[in-house]
Length: 245
Image 1 (cartoon, rainbow, N blue to C red):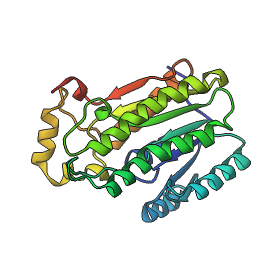
Image 2 (image 1 turned 90 degrees about the vertical axis):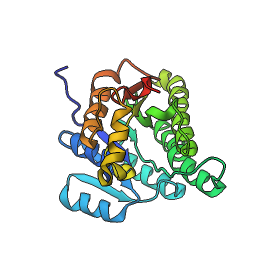
Image 3 (image 1 turned 60 degrees about the vertical axis):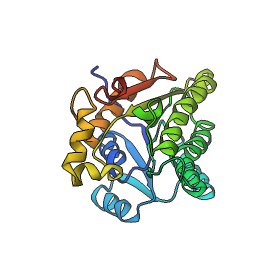
């Protein structure tokens, strides 16, 4: 399509690193971008290198402060046209030894905060706005040692569909992208250990591990090309990983 997203207010969680940062840089070419991230160093670097991007260094599980930040954004810009729920964490542990603390931490960041931010933003969003949630190809392909992460990503997909149903009368669309292996801080081992990266590639029909910029391009395309007429959908960007054993 020839049209491009322009002059929108875009709010991205986890926007100072990896996929979030690549997405923020891409959207900032033609839009007002606001990011929130818990990584103080990354926030400082993003802010210093990209004056056009507004940066909040805050933990998205600090709900009182999150509510204040969202109030500030709506008071200043009158709307959030595009919300991208990207923030997430992952730890590895067998389910038999997974502690309640570790379970709670992952679910709180990946799912509960996604719910709360979406609720706060969508209650004040104008018609024809859109929300995109970043899930994982493992939302319906669970793995050993990743139960809490995979369950959180499955929950994001269900949450996407529920918000899509409820917000449709307001003409607000809600979709999700389920991504596969990507070179990010969460997956540093791919860069540190070539054999591990090759194992991952061999499970992917297209034999590829994405870069953050690849996923950012897909996020842009989904919002640009599909968000007006599509809601409650899951766009799978994983090189075919979901169709393998």
